[in-house]
Length: 400
Image (cartoon, rainbow, N blue to C red; front, top):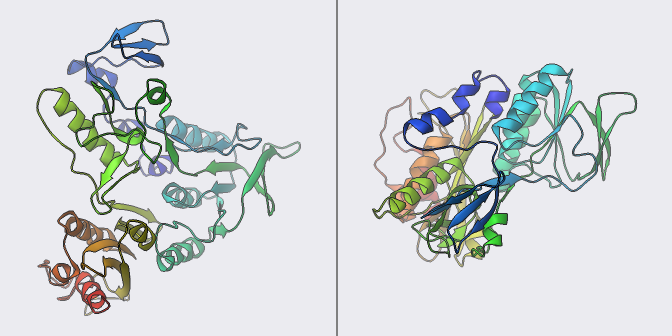
């Protein structure tokens, strides 16, 4: 959606996977502007806001997630936004079109915050990211977070640390806004809160579905909940992490799509299980590609592993063709078994495809010894005879 707001994607229709009319052609009736008020599990009926009671044989909970908004005064003022849905994106896009927005504040430092900082800066706004911590995308190792911060600063996006919002107010006699924080006031024409999401589980809790330790709906490998004939998919439910061996909350679109297909196949009478995830994710901020997979060292320790990490700086292409492009890779392995537990990468190119490769390695429970001698396609425009993956794995192996 940041790319739609910034007009990289110009047509709103390209943001819609399938319209109600397209659903109807395949026999699916879509009811818009209709709220589910309750579920009668004994009778097998869904109670709708218009008073209608719809019977079901099988029910799929796909209630998704909702964006965090701080419980502070002023977050309902015009010009203050969250970004979770296409409705949110259109609200931001229309507000920028209809109002003179010269200064943008983004509260938060995750994926959406990073992508929107690029979007707002490229739309000509003086942009600042406000964060309660010390570094952006803190899931990443500190060295990678620093690369992201340097990329922001290189493109004149301010990164304001150790600052928490207290209130939002309208500047006296003006349309402009003021964000009050524990470190003083910041003026803006538009404010975006990008503080992450939480699962929408109200309906699930009301009918007694079990929730996992993450607070999302607990499911099994077939997307079944604790209640017979009720399934859950997407951002409202947990997913199994193959590396940690634990159920986690990972609200990503590709995960939701796979879970939906699994539930549909099982409801349709066949058997299909969802094998889980390894946690691959990526984002882009200006010229920097950033990606990770698996566990961080802190996460690995919490799961009972003895993690050892190694970071190398290489080039995404052969050195003979390089013009100074850098690619940083970090790998984490278990000291006892040598099992690859996690990886991170950042660079102007080549980061995402390396992480995708390492995701496949973790999917197959490969060790650092396996990774160090992977058979990878070699040609100078795409990498050296010894790829950064090989170099990092072999360097890490010497530390185990």
